[in-house]
Image (cartoon, one colour):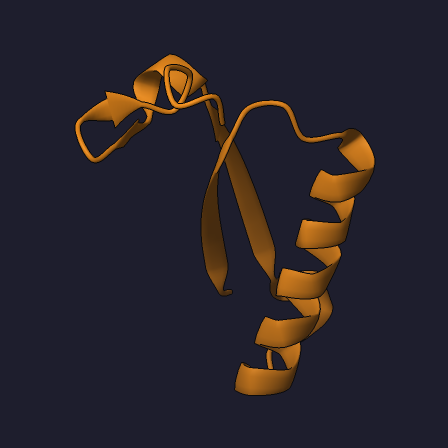
Length: 63
């Protein structure tokens, strides 16, 4: 049972997250031959204040 963890900044739509789940599932199915029913995808949304890029929070960078 493959498990993919995806970390993204908060603010994506439900449709965007559904697309990520679908495409990651398909990629693992194709690459590993894993049945789609066995693939698990976990999306963790991070607050922009908790994500640092070059020593500055993503919020302060305007991301």
